[in-house]
Image (cartoon, rainbow, N blue to C red; front, top):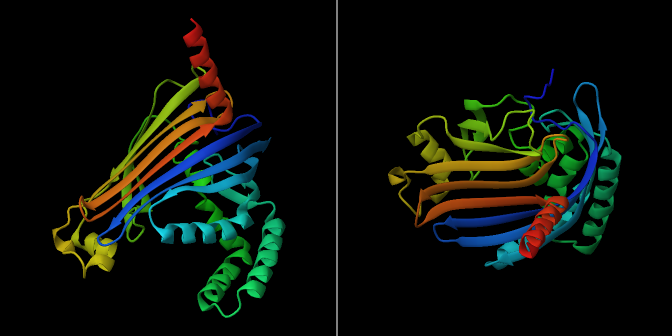
Length: 300
């Protein structure tokens, strides 16, 4: 049973969000930077007795703001095409924000069938595209795989993270995951703390999550994580450092996240091999609230 020691979605609401994703990657002989801006309309439409809830998520925009490499632009264009299938979602989530049921699977499948037909007609003879179509067809025509794909949706990872539906504080909880190059499985140890007791007299509470590798990174990890770079760099000498930091400001009454910052870094070699991610989320209402506060402060 969920009580007020938890962060949980407690009321219906509608909010618009901006998410900026900044990436810096050095792959020995390839250096890439990019910044993407996503816009969403997010509604909690129903709260169920078992603490699950139903949501409607509409992607309003997906814009590549900055990129130092033409390849990034090409990948972004392809991602935007395939991402259209998930631009309108109606889902049931559990208290932790995990997908329980895709309520509009028929809409997703219809969008995919239309998109697939257009791509097959316009780009005949492109073997790479044919392979991409075949791979995605295996996903979109399988409800279970669609559900699994939505679990990895950027919005849900940034919005919910690990903080919903658990007691605070939490020390050294081990969770399964991967490194940030996404090349090796590993265990993370996470600590989660809040700035105030829940319930609280405050309108908002800040929830902080810090993650570190749960165990020493062995030679086996090195081989799995960096083997693709073995011909370019001596991976036996690497001393990887992996860190993740997340902070979310949550409206206690409703469970609505109004602001979030997430950073994820993996530095195997500070000069040649590293990846860094920075996610920032802010609701339109909180942005307006901050603007109003600043204007009042200037007048006073």
